[in-house]
Length: 121
Image 1: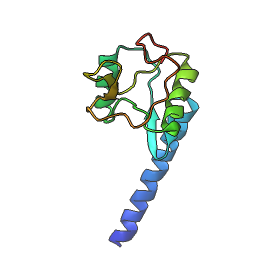
Image 2 (image 1 turned 135 degrees about the vertical axis):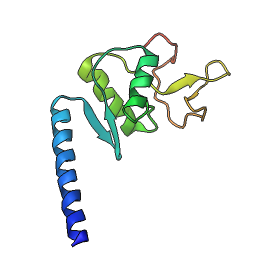
Image 3 (image 1 turned 120 degrees about the vertical axis):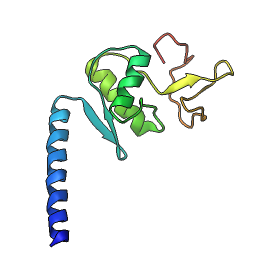
C-alpha cells in the first residue's frame, strides 16, 4: 500500500512539473540541454544581481560546457534580443578565462579576436 501511495504521489508531482514546464516553454523562459535546465526571467540586470537571482532560485549562472549548452544560452539571447552573462571570469593571467569556481574552461566558442570585454564575445 505504501508503494502504491508513493507511486501516486510521484506521478502527481511529475504531472505538475510537466505542466509548469509547459507554461514556461510557452513563455520562452525555459529550455534544456543534455538534462540541464536553463531558465531566465527575461529581465535585464547587472552581473552581481544576475548571480544572486540564480543562487536564490537554487541554481547557478550559466556557463556553457559544450555546444548544446551554448545553444541553450543562445536561445535566450536570440529570444530576448539581449546579451547573457556567463559564469566565466578572467583568470590572473590576462586573456585567459576560467569558470567562477576557478576551474579551467574546457569549452569555448568565442568570436574571432574575443573575448574583448565589449559584449561581442
